[in-house]
Image (cartoon, rainbow, N blue to C red; front, side, top):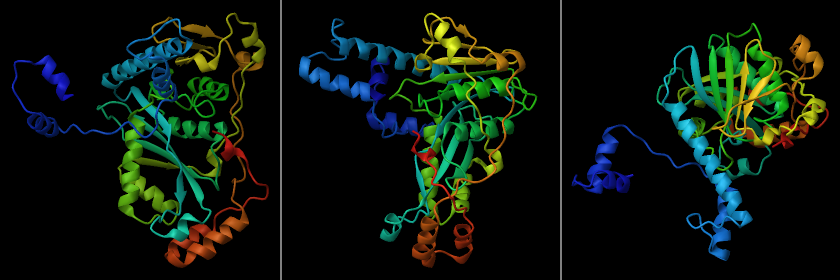
Length: 377
């Protein structure tokens, strides 16, 4: 940034340290773009070492160079579009948010004890909904649960979207930025749900748009919020149970929606593969960068490039297209953990927990059949 400023203002004489002081006085903070690196860009780096083809010296007869150039154009365009959205005016009728599932948090979290690290624990989930840009019209919202309640299947993630949308039921226009995780953010089950909710009388939504970052270049406002959550967890020190975890998130500050089993629904994929196979060229969900939903319409519009016109798509099964999507039943029983794991946590870690924290572990649900949905990525 300093070098860029000098190029743009060659007649201004100033040192790096003065520049840094001025930037700091403007309350501008900095953050690293997370620990995730881009697989495609790393492959290009290695390709360049072997061939001499670099990002600044591409050979368009080379398949690897062509692939990376397409990737580069996509992530550049998505970032540009995100920055435009982030700087746009938002109010109580229109929101632009980022959504992401925080990386795995294990409970209890008392990593100063070696015994904790070698004891099977439970996973806590935080699906975060964070307004993009500086115009923070509402606080971040963390929809949280733990694996003894539910997992992270697409139905569970969609249920967290549902809980959030009900919490902002008066918003009329919503734009959501997401990463490209197919199991969570990019599937026909989610799109079926969004057709349902945008036509539902439970909310006032008139339009809803999903926009996707290019894989490997997904840094967004939700990541900054997750960093603040991590700082809050470290500040709190020992996180003995789920309520300690919730309290830490609230201190960020943020609004927290705690999910119970009645908040998880058995959302269905109502896509007609027969319809999709008849369309030429066939639409592939992996290629979509923007998907739009509108009240009064059971079709969607999608783009495979932000600069191209949208394509209308009738993807629902005939019955759903004609009569609408019916809200499914909610889950009736918590997912639970194994009795062996519950007993081990209580027996091994109970001695270092306050009595009022141990109650959470004594009351945690136990399952009968080992669940598998945590294996979904």
